[in-house]
Length: 318
Ligand SMILES: Cc1cc2nc3c(=O)[nH]c(=O)nc-3n(C[C@H](O)[C@H](O)[C@H](O)COP(=O)(O)OP(=O)(O)OC[C@H]3O[C@@H](n4cnc5c(N)ncnc54)[C@H](O)[C@@H]3O)c2cc1C
Image (tube, rainbow, N blue to C red):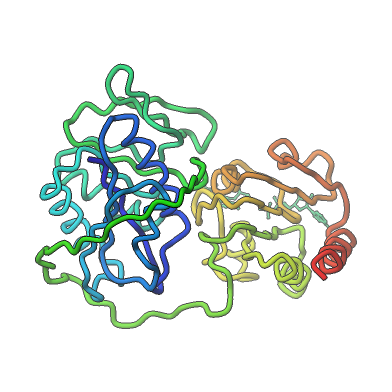
């Protein structure tokens, strides 16, 4: 059986989970087995609807204390569930939750792990999974030889497909171990689209000259219902908060649309954004390296181009 970890936050199933459910279902079909989901905690979504993504059963450990991510507790529970259900492959999203849990699960189960898969495994001769390496500059085909296999899927790598099918929901009785850490407070950024979940991201770099000019980035983001991001020097200079910094040393994202304004396109920046489906670059220097990675490019002064773009988008939205 292929067991798919269902990630959730604030009572909602995360978008990346639908992708891994579709991936898990397609993988199960390839292996001639069934796919099931595993949900630790509680959500407001009707879990039977997850059958739409190709799984037949959702196993739920119905304990609200699990709604807060604790990688040690959750990796223990996923491993126990995998043993109990005889799972051959366990699939995660390669998002922050998956990155925290998947390696621990692999270690507990003595399973081989491919982190950041970008395609279904080739099962014609073993179990070979393709992943990105060198910040997306190359692929590696990695063969997992252990009996149990763990795969985490890069977000936006696999199409979500749906049917009208419904899943059954089964409560899984597992003993929840005592946590070794206690979260004493959580400060959430309110009223903004979370960067890792956003379909559209508008990002600014040093070309914007200073924090006082960020209104043009925010206005465009607002018009597009997008999240805002920035390059590292922008966060290092305290123009923007560090949780907006994307790149090799920041958050790695893969939205449908990434708009880069006044960002040169250094390799370390690209490492965090080059899995975006569409990249639009606005830069006054036609030689800026980012144009090589762009699907669409506008050579021009951001202070002229961006307000006009925002105005047109607002008109279209009306
Ligand atoms: C180990 C290491 C890790 C790093 N990790 C990261 C990381 O995670 N993320 C990251 O972003 N960087 C990272 N960096 C830094 C990276 O190498 C670059 O220095 C950085 O990305 C550059 O930021 P920038 O593009 O905003 O600024 P700049 O390189 O200064 O580029 C500014 C751009 O704005 C354009 N511009 C100027 N004025 C305008 C205007 N009016 N209108 C339009 N365009 C204009 C310029 O033509 C230029 O292309 C890392 C570096 C190292 C060494």
